[in-house]
Amino acid sequence: MEDKILSEIRKIVPENITGLLPADELDPAGLFLLQHTQDTVTEDNYTEALKAVEGVLEITWEELNTGHWSKVPLAPRQLYTAAAIIKIDILLRSYQQGCGDKTELLQSAMKTADLGILLGAPLSSGDCSMTRVAGLLSHALSMLSSVSEQQQAVSEPSSNTEHSSVMVHNIPGIKGQMLNTLEKPSLEGFRAAHFGPRVPAKLTGCISHWPALHLWRDINYLKKVAGARTVPIELGVHYVHPTWSQKLMTVAEFIEAHIVPQTGEATPIGYLAQHPLFEQVPELMSDIFEPEYCCLSDDLGEGAVTEETDINAWFGPKGTVSPLHYDPKHNLLAQVVGEKRILLYHPDQSENLYPYEGSFLNNTAQVDPEEPDYKTFPNYKNIIAWECHLKQGEMLYIPPKWWHHVRSLSTSFSVSFWWT
Image 1 (tube, rainbow, N blue to C red):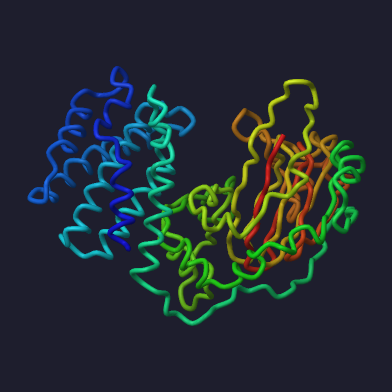
Image 2 (image 1 turned 45 degrees about the horizontal axis):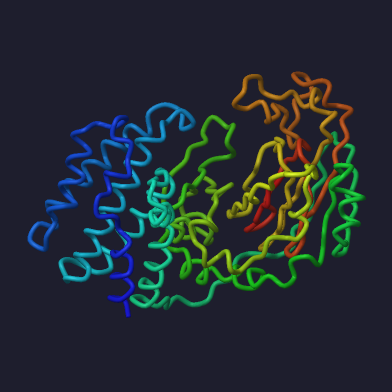
């Protein structure tokens, strides 16, 4: 069975992969090396071929990690994807021929595909049959996961994530108001009372049918489905703290280092935050469903185009924090495991929250609601906050540009749905 799956993956590898790249924007030597490696790889030179393609990946990695990510051109990202595809092809050939440790080869292929998804960009071609190339890495990963499950069954005892109720502590100096709670509101009722007038609300009874509510409480289930996948983990207090950093690790490594209770030396808080995990691991996407409220749109004019909903994962231990900020889109935050406390502020309070100046952090406030510095930010004294204690199985609707501060009160797994 596994040989059939691996053969299917190799069938969709383009033979002339450099023909799908913008040659005039890339180093000819790198393109030649990549294509030559693909054309000449044989059972007798797997090791040399891997070294060659890894050289292309390392050089491209350095280019991708120089300067701000938003300024990285598309061409080197596409080159990274192409090199990742060739490396996976070589690793799978080695696997099928028994040239090396099968577990290591499979794990290396999966990590390479994950990095290709995270850092690369879809290849393009005038040939419509090549549209499948854009999703090659995701497709390959889905099949590789099947092989991985067949190869190694999870033998660890069941371990449920922490989900006990935690009391919400009052924040000094905040005049809080509790949000309305709606039990599975109708689409039209939600539009009239909240979506249209931009009023936040807690929604209950809307995700009770999700398999994730039961499955994701089991750490071993998450390890089985996504454990071998490489993801970016935020380390430290939060993204505006001077000690904040990021690190790539597998989901299993993240769980062992930051989710499972640790003894001995303290480790920094780790957070899988705002990550499109469900594109990366479609198996997890089958555990949830996009809420029907995401079909509502601000633009009802003729010919209006509705963008796809952005679905992101937020998985971390007790104590993770998203600093006070706002998002430009409608947001439904679904709490699948654990509990969170969210503080919300109306957009008309923006000046009293002292946003950072400049384009990069202008949607983030300098004020820390948990430890406000009234001397530095005096206008914050009279501000009004809405407080929400979000429990497992509940959703919070956050309208566009509403400020919100989020703290996990226990081990937590949330899913956000952003749409316009």
